[in-house]
Image: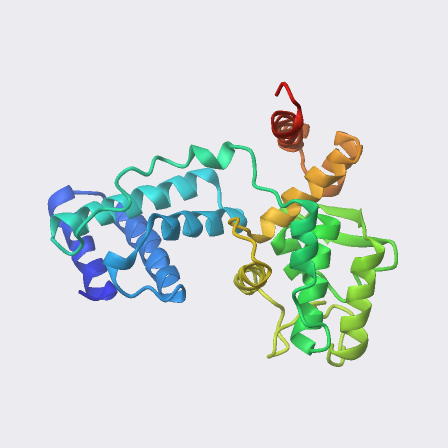
Length: 293
């Protein structure tokens, strides 16, 4: 059964047998449609080929795009109900979503890359090509400045100087974030050799082949590609580089308030979770290497 036919039958089932309100049905339909589109991007065309990891990666993508926890939870519920419907209709042999809990996991300790994994990732783009030069600069800014992917996508050509990046974060709040030497060098290489003519000072810094500003989906796919090339098996998203930026700063002695300012967190409690990441890594190191661990 095609994705379109299954979705149409599912909507009919929700309306006729579940008796859900129209708004709820539309929300379920929208969430499932986005998930099915993501499956197609992953090359999955058969419901029986869907694995639990596809659902987890889809939810991770929503989180990286800064969807609210309630929206992610609703999407998972919609997927669970949809797969329960498919099992009932005999479309699938087994229900891969059956034992997936509501995503309280989004409140857990974030995934981070080790320093050597970051280095392996950053050297993957071929900087002698226009695409590779741009991608290297994007990766260097994501990790080197700890920016949100939406903030990187909206950077203007003159938002970067030799010491700071001017960022417009959540709620259009402006902040200045220090930028390191390697990120500056990567941006300069991209601009000097491969960036097209700048028509206006408001032009985007990072653009696609069409000359339009890059979007979050492009950055997501780009990181997945380079992680695969680097042999990194963790579930890495643009937000993972932001987490890694904060954790590595903390590991090397930076104060939590300074990290809060650079990340643009309104509350210190949002930044405080990185102390748990650092403590977790200390415990792991102790148990791995101490003779009485």
